Length: 286
Image (cartoon, rainbow, N blue to C red; front, side):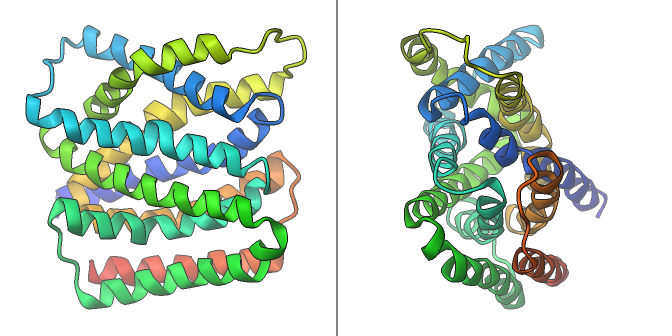
């Protein structure tokens, strides 16, 4: 019981950190190319992760851990950041944040496939209801906003759910911060050269807000947030703690409205309230 409670606390901290990721990415892609932003944030976080691993003298992962770590890297180091950065060229961060409500069901599904978890049927009911609220919002507003942006966000949700579940499974043996650090280090041989090749010829036109956005997604979204998130998933269960992601739109919409002055419609707020109620139900039967 104590481990489960700790898992929910760690998971909530991770969700709060991740909530600012899309607004920060939205600010960054106004001045940075989305592909450069993706590789740069991974390279910066990877170098920091390497320093942590060396400082604590962590032993290398076993041979059996390499493929799962590659899956984590493809899902959360490369796939999700790139797809969301591209999507945010077409839609606002407030619009894209609501799609995060689909992450819990994606994470839960991969938790069953990869983690061997078996939630109760009522859990799936509340999880499906929460996802249906998000999907309904996308169909009512997204098709007139940007089908390309919505398609990219849906793809991002799928690869991120896989990366979350795979990382949580590994965290049970390697540890939370070790998993994301090793995944980032594995990506360095690709991300560092690409960062150099895709670097803008001049940084004169890059505003301070874009630099702050890059700093946030590199340090918090790419590294610190995963320290809490993977630990929480490993302690409290992938499917159960994963439902906390339904709260992420609530925090994200607040940030989008206050920091970016983006409009937050009554429909967005209604969807957010609905998914919060669903996460309460899912938590009860997880």
